[in-house]
Image (cartoon, rainbow, N blue to C red; front, side, top):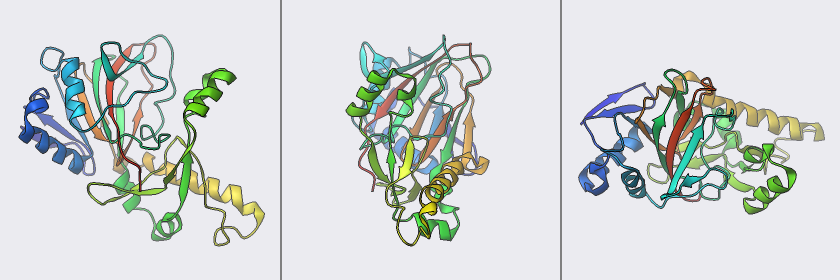
Length: 283
């Protein structure tokens, strides 16, 4: 196995490995898991259906934990938990923003295993961001200000925005807003992570005397701070950009990263299959 770092702060491409071997190979799986914690996102090439079937895909992801379904995206009919992200006939704006998957869940995903089935000759890259580094490089006064902040996240204002009102309201009732710390602690490494993204709508405990001189400070002050924190994912020094080829696979730690699917390829098709892994309650 060869490990090639792709940037200083995030990402490594792994060669000489068939992921199918990690389904039953405990030593190989443990090594890959350790590399994931170190590099945040791992990339593999040439994992086709013959060497890494859909059943293998589900089995490999399941080694990290239970797989989750999605309230909007459909799973493969023969492989529950393998979500089909097929883009061909229409634009879809939901992925071309910096986000951590499922921030609107009480237990956001631990991670995901994503395979490219079909992609354009050029375009459709994905960017991942090291949000541990994004937190570490914040000014100390900002770290102090956000250390105890809590924020609300919702699926209704994103996926639900294009739905008819009744359907959007049902999506919101079935998936009500959740509260998470603005700075979470990684449950395995103990690292601090900046944990707000595009699903985050507002702070829940910002309006205290220390932050608000006049009533006018409440919404503008909180909104500007949230925008500043969300913008940290845009810093190139925290990022790695991956160019997809058919049967490439990405495995990422969703707790410590954001990602952004570049929407520059439409109307060319782009078909991906993702197994999302259930996470824990952030603290």
